Image (cartoon, rainbow, N blue to C red; front, side, top):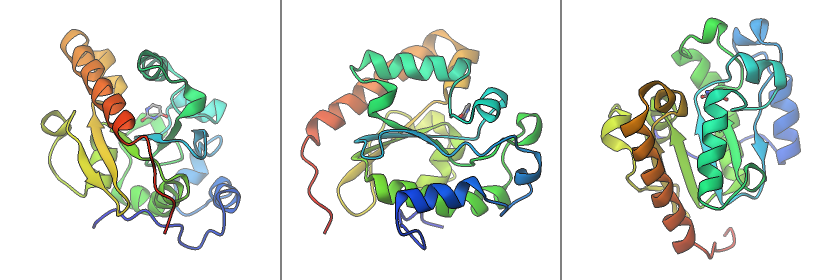
Length: 202
Ligand code: URA
């Protein structure tokens, strides 16, 4: 199913956040410590979408605060931005037990929250981190190793999506994966610079 950014039933970003923070739409609500909604600038031009919170994210309530997060933050800073200037969210807002993969039903239950986050933020560049985010937002079965680093048109107001390796995979695989991710961040930076002007919503 195509991923369509849409505010849906949410009147504002604050309503959306409040609804997500109290969500019981799937079984992850029973095992989470807290909902990890997202962090950063709600008007960011660059948005990252990861997979799901891990243990540290679940306990701190913020995405990408563990080792993978440290790498992500470093890559963001290497292109001259800070975590505060971008927005970071996940496909699934609650930690799957023992960091297992999110289930299709959990991804579907959470989809309206991510669709609304993207619709309210209106980033000009969306970076999907790893297979889960890439497959959901591009509605593809193609794997991340083939798709990474390519710009793909996204949504209906001129944004682009750039799939990248998940930072946890980069940590696992090291050298070549890190070089590829650094190159992909340069692609993202160029896309941001090119899309310096974002037309107002119609
Ligand atoms: N991995 C993710 O995909 N998201 C996080 O927030 C942390 C680790």
